[in-house]
Length: 469
Ligand code: GLN
Image (cartoon, rainbow, N blue to C red; front, side, top):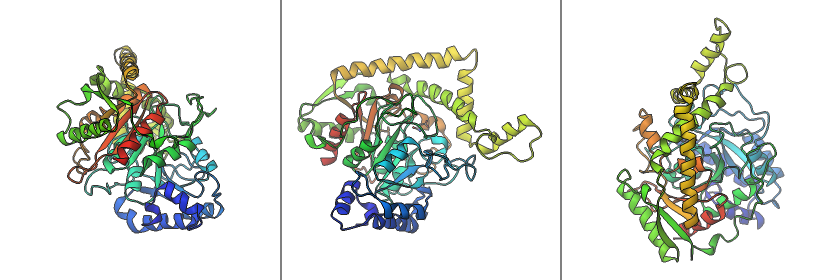
């Protein structure tokens, strides 16, 4: 097995025993990218020299010493371009600083390496909205890898690199993880600093790891979690060792199955796999409890008001003056902004900005934005009540497996609706993980395990039990 295809924990053991060097790992990742990423399209860019020299200097006594981690191309890495999958930033922006997640990775000895493809500004569910390139699903050729962290998921599934970072505003770590058959964790809002993550929906965004195994997810969370004075929404909670107790099993754990998530809209195969996983956990000593999340049907509408509203405000900084490619020969100042934005943003981003501006405009603010915030509170209360009864909640990640490439690229509404199972965790701020189940007809299917606020240890332990079978 190639080193790039190994897990972080096994690489750590091999490094510690002296069987391999950090340079061997980075070299193998480079070779895998050269030989196979032309077909997959997971990486937008990578910098070989700096990674090799970081490998030479790697401190193997650190928890992630010498381990290369791929980075979604909306997280700032000092000295590297950050395109956000957009023509607006392509060849127009080099990060002048490290995101806190990156400095934490570096402090733990890891080597951030390569920038992974995404839907433009993380808006989408298939990575087809990237203005840079298409990404194939290595686990299901001809199918979408999911999105928006499709490059991050495909890089791990394609065994190009052992692990990556993604960002999740409405499911963008969990859904591509599910579609590519890897593990994707969206931590509690505030668990990992957002400083240096290009903002999409600031009250929803969260960085998290995509890995081959649950143990690797925990290893990365150990390094990434913690308070950051540069992000006022980051939590002051202590950081436990997330790898501890992973194998304790689910004996005595109470797991909820929300009735609203198992309706006619869900593909029978997906439903069958999730129910089988629940039964298996029950046979291992968990108690399966039917629960209700009554406001689920409003989640999509609520998210698609709040997320675009925040995006329309966050993306105002891309104007061709402060950031991004500037239109040539504009007639006047106003057309400089207009032409730069018209040329720089792709159709989905424009749709979101228009939607967001509309719901925030006077006269519509109360009817849409304010009402959405109220419904958000109702959804939050649903989850609070549920977590009084159960330790974690089991659901599908998406109503269907990965669709064929191009099948719903022109149908944004269809894509929006498929976010139904993932967006509530972002609206509420809770944590969630996608862990692979047995594929169906060759297509990967993930199980989503949702946890309460700071319930990462619980969902990791439960995910580990699923993984172990
Ligand atoms: N699919 C959702 C959207 O398009 C979620 C995206 C994300 O989590 N970044 O908004």
